[in-house]
Length: 411
Length: 113
Image (cartoon, rainbow over all chains, first blue to last red):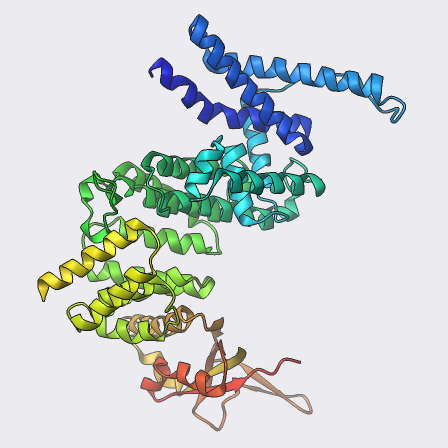
């Protein structure tokens, strides 16, 4: 790795670990301090490494510096507690706790942070934002880009979330055994949305989107390393992410435009990730309860099959039927109707499509455009025009415009 | 939105003779129909199939096998849907595979206590 790439790389991999460990030591109410110390550590690195060259073991250097900075902070705090607030409290102590930077403690701290950040006391949006900041080491600007909003909005959102966690006195600890399954559900939902933010985001920064997906996978993977959190649903979620991510490179062309599933160059699909997905899907099937991630992973699995057989679409249709009985979402309803058209024909799908009350969704009209094409091209065209008018992102508009052009050519 | 119970009744004595292919096709038809209701966000509870064997308890310690001594038509399962009216619920019951096999769907509004 080039010297100038090393520090940003280490920032991405080590910043969140340092923050998690410090935060665990100092308590959630001092998340800001933990972040400050981690930031200062990297600031020192950028100054010193530029002048003196790289240390022998850069990651170890960062840990040592962070450790010293944390010790100083604790010493100051101890002095403050001893000298200044001694009249207020007799419990003040001058002892400076040792900062444990073992691999085990780093992992534990990150996992416990994950549960703290995904606390139901704060909104889902904030959970994802905080996860990106403190668990993945993303910058405020990157988070703003991912959410297509301003730095200001993100700053305010994170500040409010941190205050809330402080007020509620959320501990950085594993939830009690009885509570784990409930809390794990929230963690999985956040990781799922984090991945989707990267996979389906309208943001055009390809590398940022890929990073979001990889971070979501890394954190989900972390959950498999602990017995209590290595559940079938967790394995199903990794399987889902692996299958989806296998098509990452095929989903955009050289100019950054979206390439739809049917038009993708299948040689760009990543076989290793498909195999990884199959491995985790096998592990996921060991339980007795199927989560929505199981059904979604099953659907994603069938999408990795290149041959376009009736069996493929029939299986996808049945999995969507199952998924919808577990949890309704407009996107699943639309996808199910598309699968129905591939399995049972366009006429059957059109009948079902007309029953969906999703007139405000551009994807609904996009689906109608697809179903009417070749059946009633005039209706197809007017549906696509509605989709164009309702869509927001330039990328979506471009895809819809291409479909309108294709329709005109075949007429 | 109100909840409506769908009760599926049919002459289930004929179902035992079906081949595995027929049974698989039957399952697909049911899942496509249920999936269609779920895709409209009108499925409240997918419900369950009911076993054909059972017992009926009557006064004076009289216990008989099966609820179906006189009638051929038996209850095979149930589902709960959401609809704004009985008419809309009846609309949702259209296309239920049981209708193609000589059975029927009884629809009852669930009145919450």
